[in-house]
Length: 182
Image 1 (cartoon, helix red, strand yellow):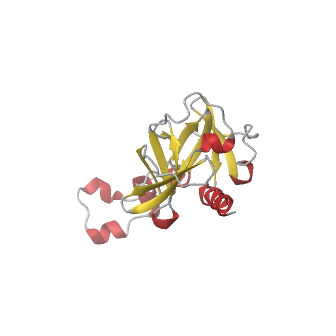
Image 2: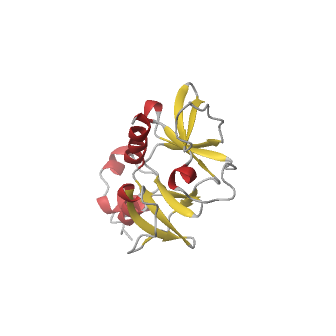
Image 3: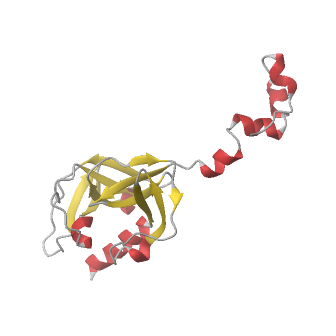
């Protein structure tokens, strides 16, 4: 916790010039302290067939009601097709099919997570809204992941009785685009 070395707070309203000349420790108190600035990044976790994945707060992403993509002939089943999101065509992927995850509820996901924006946007189907996770504890060993996710996975964390893994979405989606082009 920061200690305020500025008596201006005890004197009522502060003039702008006095506020700008305050001790740096008082600014730390106002912003919640240095520990919150470094460690306070909110992460969002979601599940796909019981596998937990993370999205950084810095990642441009949005959740939309499940779109109905237009299928493209002669493409793999895991490529669901294209959907129009506010005038931008967004490629949609079924990660359960792609990774061979057996799930009785496949195809019944209510939402899509769109990662990226503009021409860089790509999406996949999810069952529930991502949950905010601010109490992540790093784990030493990653949980078993599908082989195709391993090169794109990062640190694993424990939160809310589940393990969530970081994923490099731009690199992952780029590799999927390369598979489609081949």
